[in-house]
Length: 91
Image (cartoon, rainbow, N blue to C red; front, side, top):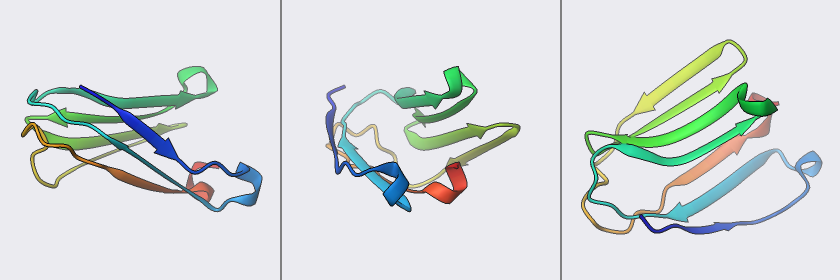
């Protein structure tokens, strides 16, 4: 996989949302594309592929959410996921 990262940086205290994008391409139907955590791994976010479909998982405190759907992304073409995050949810 190849990644091209890009984001606009602003102070979190002045922001109400964050928008982050990157590009990837793969033929592999399974695997982690992006992982991030806070609080030494207590809260985390994972974007992965399961049978070629995107799977997003978020864990914050005692709540875990998994969402899957959309087109298969293991077609060898470049894809640019967009993740708008509202900070009030993550605060």
